[in-house]
Image (cartoon, rainbow, N blue to C red; front, side, top):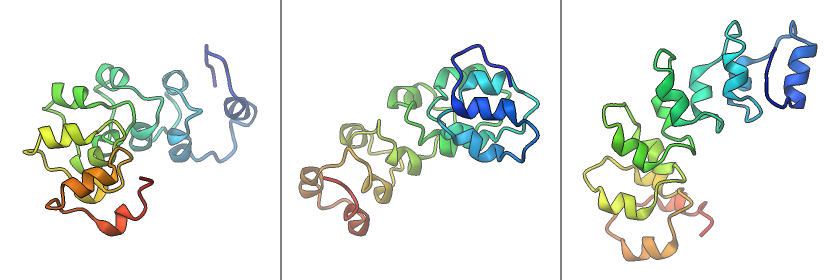
Length: 152
């Protein structure tokens, strides 16, 4: 495996033992794997569903590589995806269930976009949801079992 950037220990292991039975699905979601590593090793069986949720994958990478089989369900959960990106790309198949859990989605965004199919189950787990928001919006279909896991 070749990379031009600073290498990490996982990349070193991959270089040392290229013929070992590496799990490329798990490697694809590993935060130690960067787009540069993927791009420089196209012969490897990268899993684009798992790469879609990898925090090293940015919208610019997805946009500039439309030939890749990106998974928009998992990409909707990627912390690099913002509401601005979603709003500016309405033609993409964003998954509002996973967007509801995305840490970039705030109550202000949800309340300003009531026409979107937000998932209150996942919103109940969203770290931006506070007990005040729940208190002030008792008419919303919150999942109280999931709110129980939220770290207000």
